[in-house]
Length: 248
Image (cartoon, rainbow, N blue to C red; front, side, top):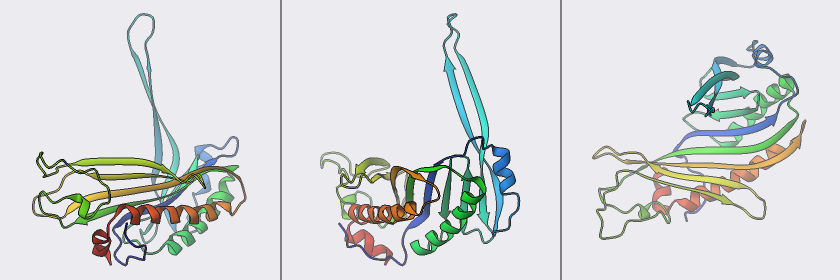
């Protein structure tokens, strides 16, 4: 594993925090929309968020029946400088920082400000899931046939007898810290790489925990700090020193 430290050129394409909530009884999309109709906090509505459902049934006559429905469940808000995105949904709140990423303290400070507005206007009952997610685009300087083990710890490698040039791969784990019950989904993926260019390997770390926090509470911010520590353990544990040095 690599030594943990601040990386001034971290390969982060998106960083976010997420709270899944139990909404107050009777809350509707129209009320949510009205609650954010006044853009008095530096954000504007980019577009609505829709969720779809698909159903399949096989009735006695043997003719399959399918149904599809879509409903608007939230709003996507952008800051005026286009650096931050807030998703305010009936079922939760997601706050993300777009490139270039700055620091955790900046992300959390703005997330706390916008969450306070969300909580005041929509009055959710409980927070039932807390998460932070970081998506990294690792541009690896690799020649064709070079082993990924140079940059990624314990990535499943190819037997020597098979061709060594890899076009795509996908590796995914869900890990659990048994002492805290914090969890993380680690995904390493390569879609495709153009010849002669750096290899774009995506490292997606989604650290989360399920909980039951009655509102108002500050406990979720303490949980987020622990999830951030777990995210860092995963990031620096997955990568080798050779990989991390690329972003100093």
